[in-house]
Every structure is written in C-alpha cells, then in structure tokens.
Image 1 (cartoon, rainbow, N blue to C red):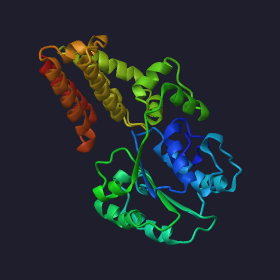
Image 2 (image 1 turned 45 degrees about the vertical axis):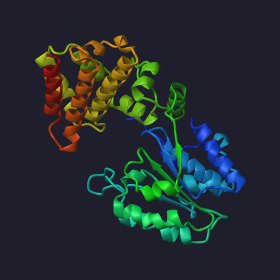
Image 3 (image 1 turned 60 degrees about the vertical axis):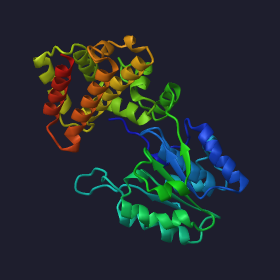
Length: 343
C-alpha cells in the first residue's frame, strides 16, 4: 500500500483556490469571521484546507499555501504537530482495533473552551481545527457551542464536514459556511504525483478520475484496493440482468469479501451505486443510452424502475456494514433482488 501524507504534512494546497481566497480576503480585511464550516465530499482536501488556513493565520498572513515556506517557524511547528496555538480535535484511534473511532468523544470537544481562552503563545492568534465535525455527538456539539456563540478575540475555529445535516442548527447558523468543489482530473493527478503515488498499469487516468468522482481520497482507495477489474466484472454482470451467471456471481462475491487492508466490498459497493446514480442522471437528461447499464435500468418501468433499482442496490449493499452481515451473501442477495426487479 502506498504511503500518503497526512493533511498536516501537505505543503501545498491543490484546488480550492477561490475558496481559500475568501479566507485570505476576510483575514486581510480585519473582519475575519470567527468560525468557518468547511463543507465538501469525502477525500477532496477539507482537512488540508483547514490546516492551510491555520498556517496562514498563525503566521500572520506570511505562509501562503500556494507558495509554502517549510522553513517558516509557524510551518515547522505545524508540520511537527507541536504548535502551541493550534488545537486539533478529531476522532481518536481505538487502541484495541487500531481503527479510528466512529465519533469524537465529548472529552475531546471539551478541550476547545480552555484552549481558546488562553493567551496566544507565539503571536496574536489561536486556531482550533475540528475535523469531521459531523461525528460530534449532541453532547459534544453542545460542548463547543458556547465558544462558537461567544468566541474570545483573535480566536478562530475551522470545522470540516461532509454533511451539515448532523450539525446543530445553532452551530450552523453561527458559522460561515464555505463549500469546497470536487477536484478536477488534473488536480487529482497533481496530488497523486506530488505524493509519489503510482497509477498501476491498465488504469486510465481519465477513468480513474471519473470513478473517483472528484475525490483524491477515493482515487487512492481505488488504486490501493485494485478494484477496477472487479468493478468491471460487477458492471458487466449487472448489464446482463435479469440473467445471472450464478458461478461467476459467487466467484466475484468471494473476491470482494476477502479480508484485506483496504475494504474491497466497501469501495465496490460505492462505485456500483454511484454508477447507477450517474446513469439515471444521464437518463433524466436524455443521454442515458451511452451506458450499457441504461437498458437494464429502464427495461420495463422507465425512470421509475431505474430509481427503484438504485434504491434497492443502495440499501442492500449498505446493509452489510450497517448490520455487520456476511458481505459475500449480501452482495449475492443484492444482485438477485435487482435481477427479480428486471424480470
């Protein structure tokens, strides 16, 4: 598995230039909003963006992310994760499993108020970064609410989230929301190149970017899991519905259910559901005939059937992880259900 940089280690921001210009403009004007909610899809660089904002603010505007100076005192401290005026709150690692915990504990959230109340140690400002803020439970969100409602002077908070639906309305209403766009193919390739990630032979760059949907995080998962051949096999199988090659289906189920460092079942499920969704969107625009899957989706019931098939695939495939079910059996059942709907 290729080694990738953590967000705090990234020395340049790729993409999101217009969004970052908003931060620069606000800071330069002296009217910087105290709390920013950075919203965007998973894997597009929200945490990197927030770290870059911390670099910019804590250096007093000297450390521009587009021309990063790694020898700047602020940069050296942040890169070493030892800056006294930067607090990072995120999901901790479960010591028993080694995996990230599902949520940010309330104890972590309670660190925000005392930290921001202290006098800055290395300058004029203090910055707090709350990564994946949607994983804060209600009690944890209430623990940060006062700081977001009544922040100390020269203190700034950046919250990153893939969705605002899990955030308390009182938090959302007091934050400046900054939506980040998906990355372009060129931007994804630039990031992979800078992190020295090699694209395996046989994977077309354009296709990789399309499957990744503008997320470099997903592009990395696709590369690491070597999922493209299995994805092609799964889509070919769906294009043959309602007929099913049972032996082939079981063989594919075995391949994706194997335990590995990268969860092949998870990434394949996402790609299948997204492919169906994209095909339906094309159908709605009158362009659906371009994908072989389109004929299966509208076999009898038009867009209504297509949406029903998408809903079935989404629910059935997600149930394996939500309910800790056997992944091979779940995959087989999901394809079987879709086959019956196409008859």
